[in-house]
Image (cartoon, rainbow, N blue to C red; front, side, top):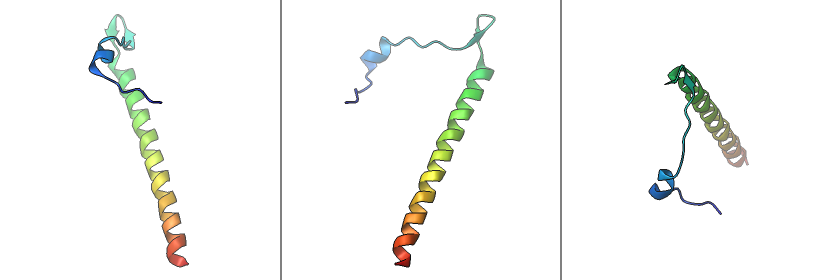
Length: 61
């Protein structure tokens, strides 16, 4: 079962950011976020394509 993420739990959460010379490395974070966005977009497109194919197969019948 999935557990809800609450404010109380977020206060106990330690998040470690990538650093370079003891400073946050924003370039790496930006690259990582961009890669995640591309993966999400790819999954949305694949899901939409499957729905289109399914809809066409029903309409054709």
